[in-house]
Image (tube, rainbow, N blue to C red; front, side, top):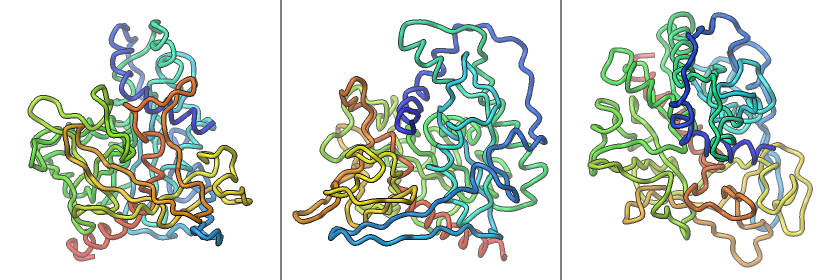
Length: 387
């Protein structure tokens, strides 16, 4: 289920605008984000973010141990998340009903940040998988509004600022279509404006953020730079992942520049440059060997929702003729009982679509690194603010 969701999330992000352009939208009715039902996650309640994040750590020699997750009961900062395309609702725009697909992607991509921040995740009327599938078949669904998804994200953001922020620092987090929504939000509502001072960082996964070659700002954003250290604040982390031995092809969806700009690449495993070990949290349901327990050879039982495979994967930003992207390397050695891979390839009919890279697991690959960075950034931000 989750693999299918994430494949469609990747594809929908790039096709949403084209699918909606041919439609004549009805007058938009705005959501009421003072209603708790319009939020997937909010502090102080049991919801999609209060879920089990425990992990089984598997070392190369097959030793297994349990890493127990604990959320911070009183975190000093906030995180605001916009999820990728997951909705199976009929029509172009999703409804506001919270369904298993939204809950599953929050489990994979956002709930772990509860170790560092209060969690806010609005529902929004995103471009649906149904509309994506229709477009891929050469059809166009009617009745959708191309502006609705962003309008919802903007309304939720404004409601958060008005009634929940109370001057706190905030990290923006998104993947795929969610990253696209946040890129618009930053460009239109934050970039170069007073509220930028409250942005600890923005984490834009599985996207192609534009910057001038050799520069940190001037493309998608005019005043929000790329992050280069764990203690830098007010900056953006943006990336897309590919296997080191399968770089972005000419038709790649990610890692390519546009005109005078190039794709931003900031590596959470080594923001200052070079290569770093990935502190990945892989969903057990996404095992590359198939089945929730098949992370070892032979399979050994895994009962947690995540596995960690220390030392198996490293990542480095690569800037070459293929584009600007994170190259992920796998280091399974002889005698390593682990499967030696993490899956994540987009497949249609069993054929790998190399233009999507490892889009399905962008968040999983970097999750531990990103949570650590948010903690470091939080301390730096609070120190500057005198807190």
